[in-house]
Picture (spheres, rainbow, N blue to C red):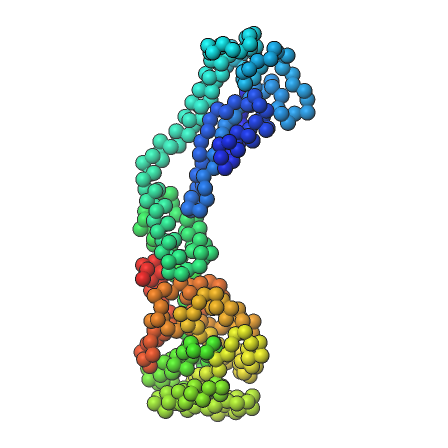
Length: 404
């Protein structure tokens, strides 16, 4: 007896596969539905698996040799001409007749007995595993529901599906089958924190002044963010701080920064050319930090991006840091275009503004994953210097999992 398994989307398709390979005389011994394992239960449909059998003495449909079974009179039965007697080990021929008699023949009874025997053997093997797992079924269902709930929560908070699936797949591979819901939640929480990473903060290191460039599109709050960070260094760390602005396209921007400079007692210099930037380096040589405000430019304009790159390259790489300022209210696909445009010219750290104007923070996680650039500061209001803080990975993870 030759036994094979066939899988397809439906029972009919699986039977057709069996008949195609084993021939029309194949007997279907067992039919069962197989559900995808793991997290893929959520996204893939079940498949049907049938177990089919045929006497090894009956030629496969795919065989090149002609059938070896003895010629028999035409019958209306669909059973094979010869079967293997499981009791005696001998071959039995079908009884003669025209097949019109509705009384079950001996051969039909033997086929039914054979099918029952095979089904019993298959079911016993499956039962051995299922009995052991029966006590865990309820817990497994709870775990699956928990994972689904967490996944939905991430999506509701506008985490990109690609990254949500990645998180679930990674934690699932490390979870024990009997993991509690608390363990599942803790694993995902820790995974999000690890992916967010440690924030890159501005620090005073060495005696050489550090030039901190702020770049980004218009209207995201670069100038206000500069004032918030500068005031903390000036007031809390008693650092020597200076302002430079290359945002000469908007008179209001220069005046806004000048106002902050006057309040904090910080010198301000407006930069119009490469020569003036070089002069500023000499003028502020004994300062700790020089904050540079750049003009808000369109990420679509290569010429404008080149201007920013040229300005930044006037400062040696080891004496500068660049921070891309983005609004948390900007659409994700626009943020993708912005970050990709700026990544063509420089490496940067990320600052997100206007967290107080949005109910979801999935974009912070998405852009961090997309760019792999370190997160830094986040702002949540217009108050200077209060409404700013370092990005807190634990707090972000809690918000992504807790919801709005």
